[in-house]
Image (cartoon, rainbow, N blue to C red):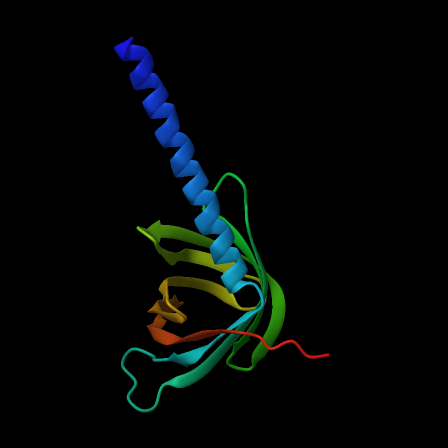
Length: 147
């Protein structure tokens, strides 16, 4: 009898974990879809005012069996301004999503690494592109619908 109760308890906990994962993943997708990351970035070793950056996230969808999310994103980086699907690995640190890109090749832009915390309408983290790297931070807001 104890074994049966233990098995039921384990399966109940596993079900709750998966339900909570789905809820938080759905909430993250809803929050990020139709949003804009607007902020600045620094470059290690360079003084002065940080450079502006902007990412418009048209849609976000989590792949079923991995930590990869597909961001349909407009990226303004330097002289580039492109819209493309970007596979973005997101891990969870408790209830906080963290983007964990390690040497991710983004078409037309190059290879990037970034570790970015998303928290309460803000983002902050580190980035690297080739030999250059630095910090990045800003706000996340919903895009206003235009008719």
